[in-house]
Image (cartoon, rainbow, N blue to C red; front, side):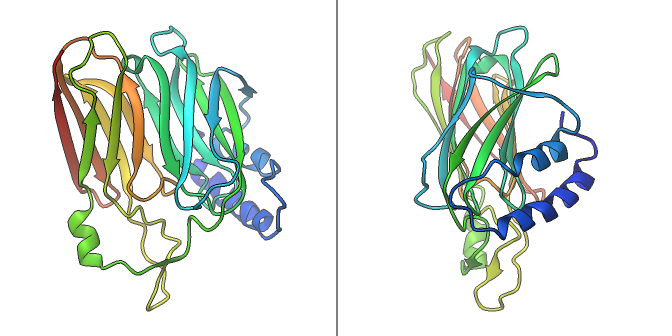
Length: 267
């Protein structure tokens, strides 16, 4: 679990991060990590390991849509499996992009998603095991401008389409085998750092806050999204069904609006 003093620590670390970001890095720097680490995991040891991996492009085409893939080379059925994954973009104004809470139904975990990056940065993925120990992997990616900028969308249209979910699963399934699954939810994922194109005032944060995946009412994966997740959140992962049944996702935005979708799977 992340430090209970997170809110206080983030305030202090954000100021330091902004100070670091005034410098023009030739490439991503790891100098921010000690500050960010203490903000999220105060006085806790984190071991860098090979069994957790995060990969991404050396240079992203768009800072607003940076593809990354995270994998764990251990089955989720392991007694000391990774239970939570924290995706942290060191140099972002709000570093925590998302938290993934994992369950046994995921099998051998691999997930592809897209994140926002304001500038060149290391991305750290920190895994918390069942015994509370922390492990991590990191990757350096060059990117720019993914968290700020301007917004010129028609507000009525944005809100009319927000929350539409596409849940795609290879069907029929094979019981006991990994089943590829794709989740996309239509949403602007406004960061609170973007400005209105006309008024130049800041546009309030408006984003998907969480999503819960279940199969036959049993938990598969819960996700806590942050504003560091890209517009129209995208997840591709696999789970291991133990029978035919219903895969369901329930999502909620930061204004409390709920969305859901489900798909019936047969073998």
